[in-house]
Length: 233
Ligand SMILES: Cc1cc2nc3c(=O)[nH]c(=O)nc-3n(C[C@H](O)[C@H](O)[C@H](O)COP(=O)(O)OP(=O)(O)OC[C@H]3O[C@@H](n4cnc5c(N)ncnc54)[C@H](O)[C@@H]3O)c2cc1C
Image (cartoon, rainbow, N blue to C red; front, side, top):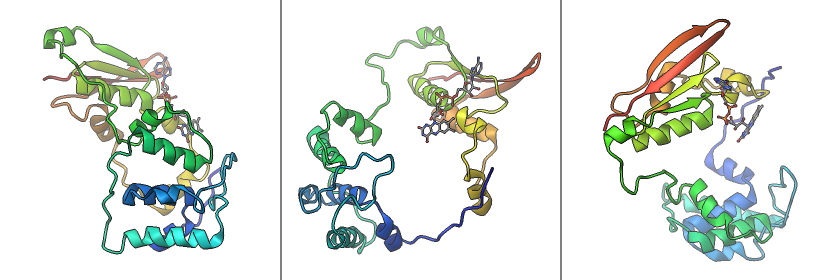
């Protein structure tokens, strides 16, 4: 059942006043390069709750200092980060400080990739010929987010693919399910919603020059949306 959720208007200072202390501390390190924010008395307390206390066990006066420092970053407009990529060593320190525990080093490159500090795109060391690529047409079953992301990656590599979907729309879980309250958010805050066909065109092959022939076939009692994309060089 959908419930109406009251929507509160947020400006920057009220958002910072409500921000999780861990996040604000990492913003400070990222934006200023100053590692003192990773040490006591700022260091968050370890909290293994599913939804940890946003105050991170930090005394009120220290929280105020942290929030004021974040707000100050914006005094001359949008700030530019001093750190463009923290590297494995610093991000590990940041992750350990955030969680209040030692984080294993193998998580560092993973997190840098997740956060977009290092690229995650698959690339060719030596690109095969168009003829070879054309013979490697990939069939992706199901058009959930993973399939869409895979389609984008294949498109960038120049590998032709077809995504088939048993539902009449793409999106998988996010098409089929509704989070409680999510529909009411949409009702109170209209989100521009391009048609599914437009979403497909952009998401399925953003770098293609000619792509996304979408065809629909009916199979006995199931509608099947087949999305094909051939990526020329
Ligand atoms: C209520 C709910 C909340 C969730 N919340 C989160 C969250 O907050 N964060 C998070 O990261 N994850 C969450 N998940 C997990 C979510 O499933 C994944 O994030 C993600 O959507 C999985 O994507 P997928 O592409 O792997 O699979 P799916 O989204 O499941 O897509 C699979 C697609 O394959 C299609 N398909 C299956 N079999 C066939 C077939 N034989 N022929 C043709 N098509 C077929 C299906 O119709 C579907 O469209 C949630 C899941 C649910 C159910």
